[in-house]
Image (cartoon, rainbow, N blue to C red; front, side, top):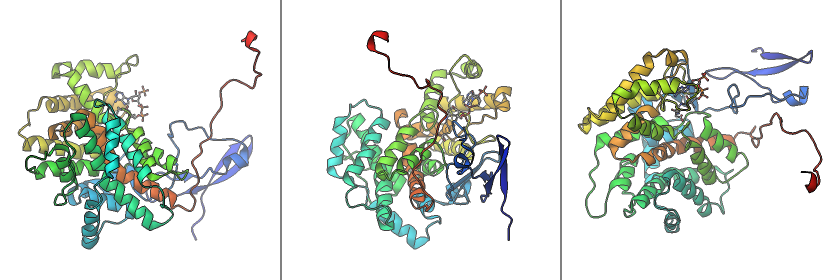
Length: 430
Ligand code: CMC
């Protein structure tokens, strides 16, 4: 019988034991759930630098090795051998689909791409120049108004339908946001196309002529989806879990995830990175911007660089660099000004002592903006592409949480440092 490991903490001269929990890979954790009851203290870990918020079977990151596994499979192999729907299936079910399951899942997703016609009227309520992330937060959340009554998420069949609906409809919702902004007519999916090709068709097709899919470009988009599908307990996933922990509707939880993802420190980095490259404009100004990013008195950061977990390299960035080169070659854009600028910036930053010391490497968003721009996706839509892909991870994580027998509503504690108790003075004395 294996011996149970313990960690002993001395609090106010008294020793208290806590169980140590072991994972498959990665850091073991000290189970401090009983700390408050045993000692009267809480832990303080603002920003969750050392806190495991849950147990999960889904994704593992080794930040030092630069490794990312979905259900144990390396991201490089998944990007080479699978499509995004295989990965979405894997994240949720724990195993890759066999041939029959794959055919069945792909068919089901194709048959759920339409949105209720009433939902398409929501778009008219937005300004035409609204940021598309603002639009999709609203419209994805509004799906809860269509799929709430009669759903019981403790039943696996209801969770099945929910997963299928979200995965199938999110590309439609995002492409409609783009079409609304541009004033182009809404396009609905074609059932003869695969998931990524369909998204490109809904974005760029027009009713008056045939849309020809470029397989190199649609595969590139599919790989972007795979690379962004999940990333363990990042800010948006933790947001989805926290929202879902109260038993909230899953479509509303996805809207919460989209809101969190929008920020420039998270999914908004690809948009910010491209805007930064455009602002730098020329290789001759790279040094100036590198210096600004190192200046403590300047809030400027090199977008697409650094990561909370990866302290060696982001394996997704390597794959994205390759996808970027393939797409630019396919389009004859090898000498693209921003691509050249990005390569130069990457090289200079990687040789700079500041970036070496702080272990700052390009992350997935460094090249993804350039690829998306080459695919014709407007800059303001980049984070929507990330949201589309991450929906698969959010839903898998939400389901893992609500089916976990140990699950409780998330309720962090705090260290209160505000005013001490005091009495309300009369208005004449304020
Ligand atoms: N440029 C310049 N300095 C940086 C950068 C950067 N991009 N990133 C971190 N640093 C510095 C930071 O100022 C700090 O310096 P010091 O030790 O002197 O205070 C040190 O490196 C550690 O950084 P941190 O901000 O404490 O690290 P964090 O783990 O809290 O933040 C991060 C990680 C991703 C938010 C941050 O690196 C960043 O803002 N990067 C730019 C935005 C970006 O590319 N985000 C996309 C992340 S990947 C996509 C995703 O999964 O969402």
